[in-house]
Image (cartoon, rainbow, N blue to C red):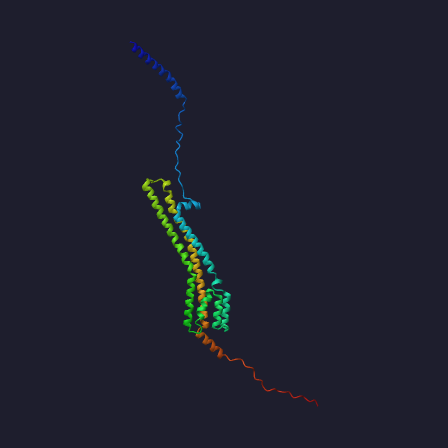
Length: 290
């Protein structure tokens, strides 16, 4: 009996506690404001890195190997253009004052072989070097003199075109390096898709695509000016070579055996002017006035 009464008292006490806590829970529920159903849920937007535009960002996106290759190509291209512009100055290749005076003295017969060689050796321009090759065949048939002039001209043309091969190499290899970067970038992008399941995630694919696009663009940026400079310098060399060929042919017509023989014939066939022979002197008789 005692145990039964104790159990009934404990049950009544628990019911009373539950009844007291119910109004408090209801009041707390009334004080809580309901959430606004119209308010949109904040979604974290993924940060997508675009293609860099600053030099450091471009270099970082391309990577050290491609950046180093493009820097080396640019330096070599600029150096080749400046060096060829200095070498191909017309007054350096064909000094007009020297050439005009030299040919004028040859036409007038004021220079022999030794004197002409000495004058050209003192000048030592590319045109003077061609003259030296021809002067060594002084008085020989025109074919031999012309061949000597041609040999000297070919040697000088090779020297003039020496730097163009480097510039042509820069304009040819730069797009190929860019194409290699494109292939490497696309391989990187597909590898990211395969390993990370990154289909549709531009942030994951951005590095590979940036490498593919930037290397192609930088390669073309280097190659286009290099090709334009190559074409300009090649045209300038052609113009200089034509002038050198004309002057070389003029030298052949002045010092070949045929030319010297013709000049000697003209000199002997022209009679020297003689003094007039005085005629009889007529005297006038004086008139005597009557």
